[in-house]
Length: 448
Image 1 (cartoon, rainbow, N blue to C red):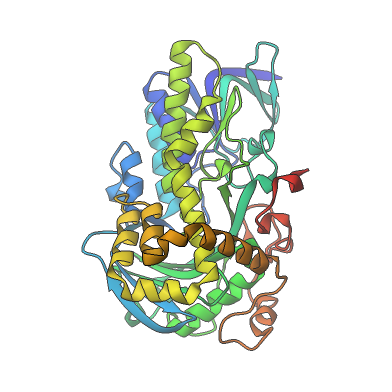
Image 2 (image 1 turned 90 degrees about the vertical axis):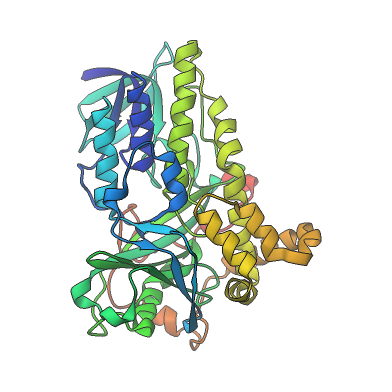
């Protein structure tokens, strides 16, 4: 079997993998990127690039923007939408096929070697502790391996079980503007609904030439998402011809927990493989890119010092982004427990709205947003935290959900018919395994 040697092999060419490879290659480190796909390739995603992401991309990407949003039209249970604005950009719209390809091209231009259509079959550790990455009829050896291969990461299984993450799910599609009512949306305004399911939200992100629509929520409610999107599109009057089929694509969204292991001596994880999806908004790009920067710094220091041990990356990643993911996760629990209150605060409380906007821009934090949401009840946070965790557990343990304002079973009934959701993560299109353990807040003893 043929073998090729590198200093670092990055498995996965998405944003986290490409930024990691770019930074390493620019430092003169021999770096390979392996990906199961050729680029450009489609990637299931809302395609909203929060402004905070730009601080961790070391080159200009403004030419990829297909619109910028600084207003939000927000409804609760698809009723009484209202619009809030912010004076500065909040989210830039992109096409992931273009964005990911450009980041990969920049990594190649910096000196990284890309091998597309290369599916990783497994990892082996050699006697000298170097790592072998096995693909069909070939092997790549390296001092270090970076797992950047997404929610269904092969490399992640080297370090974690699935129950070490908190899982959500999302569906999306992009509708060409020819099929849309131009009067139903404004290019600078994202359309969002929440409160229709016990957790999660539906969105419409206008872009040049199309609108990206979708919905996300806990894995336990994944079966309802396509029906939720269909109802959302209908109630917002987005389509010229109501009832058109939506070619929805489904994918899973992992967030790290205290149990997640993102580093060993020679293998580390970044992006979705590490669980850097921010759970409150479902954004998977901002912290993925940041994790790539952290990983490349850690590897660079190890190679320079001749200390071939990356275990320190665990504390590096958690110290830089762990708190933000933690507080985002806790805000999700608060929202699930008090959805009407959260909607009321976003609608009427200027401080909450402004802190949320500043957080999307990277100028504030989810911890501060939590404080503003609690207001005078901040002193009781420990009690509120215990209550919301317990209530969330009960909600996620339910086997059936329904939309607010729907007769019991109606939304679920519709979700079993209609268009099929194509999964990009090896799961059935209707998320047949949604009611499994990773949909819940799992205790360590359940990991086996």
